[in-house]
Amino acid sequence: MVGLKPIAEDDYVLAIEDVRDGRGHVGRTPKDLEPWLKSFKTGECFQSAFGLCGRCIAIHGDRGVDGEVFGHCVQCQGELVEVALELQVGLLQLLDRLPRRLRPEAAVGRLQQLGLGRARHERLAEPLQVALAHPAGGGQLVGVAGDAGGRQLVDVGEDQLGELRHGRRGQPEVDGGAALAEHLAALGPSFADRPVLSPTNDDWVLALARHRDRLEVHYRFPFAAYDVVQRALSKTALYRACEQLGVAIPRSWYLDDRPAEEVAAEVPYPCVLKPDDSRGFYNAFRATVFVVKDRGEFLRRHADAAAAGLSLVAQEWVDTEPGGFWSVASYLSPDGTSRGVFTGRKLEQWPPDFGTSCLADARWDGAIADAGVRVLQALGYSGISEIEFVQDAATGQSLLLDVNTRAWKWVGLPIAAGVDLPLLAYQDAIGQPQDSGPQRDGVRWTFLRDYLPLVRAGAATVPEEQVTKAEWTALLAGRPCDLVDAVHDPDDPEPAYDVLWSELTGGLGYRCAC
Image 1 (cartoon, rainbow, N blue to C red):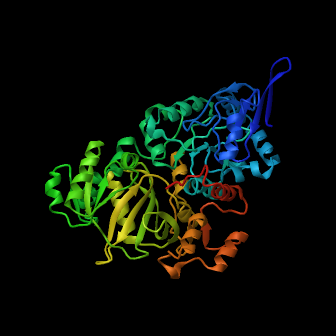
Image 2 (cartoon, helix red, strand yellow):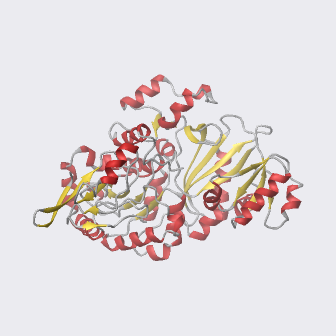
Image 3 (cartoon, helix red, strand yellow):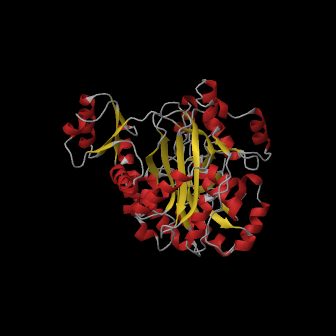
């Protein structure tokens, strides 16, 4: 039981917390709680309709864009944040007395919640950081940067500051980010200084950029304007910019100025059809690209996309050897200045065919670093980004494939290698820009949850790069080593527990920031 509210003589409302997912459920009689009790039989968690505010004990239905009821009503959230900001020294003293699981060091890893970055004692007056974070990449965006740069994350999802859960199953693409913007705008006046917004998901980047004019009065934006982000994400605009700059890409055929029938007769098969609107394409087809085997399939898929209002680019299929997938990660200031650049390789992915990274390493390649930065500058892009390259197995040439206009799943690797992109973005946003030094090669990143099934299935493609026993034991023991995990940290075990519990319960509540 987590709350009790008298509503009449000898009549009470009871709030109960479900230890499986942390949700609170409110009722007056056992019948009110019957759907929640039945969920234990089915093995599914039940989303509550109402909550009992942990501060004013009011019954409320205030919820985030994901439909989750807040632990505190919206009015109390604003009041608690305002009080915390006014009582800065007292807040730090309070945090020092909190149990370890509720301290900012632990809160950094509570990856599915909206958090506020706070300065340490000597930097208390600096702006906060509002991090919309998903698991894996999201936590390291704030957590590792906080360790290096003096900023900490206060978890506003706990009793101290109210609950703001925009991370759990949020889908701002449904309403163009209107609900998310509405909530942030309402919260904005509570801050003593404009915080720095740090979205880690494509939907959030576009949603916040779309509502920038409304939100910028309350927040600092360390990423590009909406039209620039859209241009960088559009394959047609991206590949044409590459061609103008002489940056190599796979052979491409544009469908915005030629009939599909003409292109279909010209391209070699199999070929890849890539969308200009990746998010809209995924929502429509639950796929990232179409791989087509012949002219008939080409025309059918093109018609499917056109019916959904989506435009495509045709591109040749490129065979790539294991270890031939590279990334250029960087932070560029609004004037186009490159503040920090990192290059590394994706060594393994899970699932093996079209999965996401589970093992990567830091390895410098100046040629693709230069090419990637030039493309971003030509697009007018600023902020954190990751550009994907592949090495053509036939020619050895590095070809640019894609741009991610945000932090991505293994953003923790460049941070561990000495190129702290989130910190560079934060410092620039508060008017204190700084440049990163060179990266440290040889550092590796893994995501244990995905790496283990890869090894168990015998699906590893680069056996000489597999994680050794010495690396595993050092990582698990918390000893310094050149291997970092996406979520495991002995000083902050709760994120790793969340992933473990998610796996044991069938993946409930876990999403990857890919």
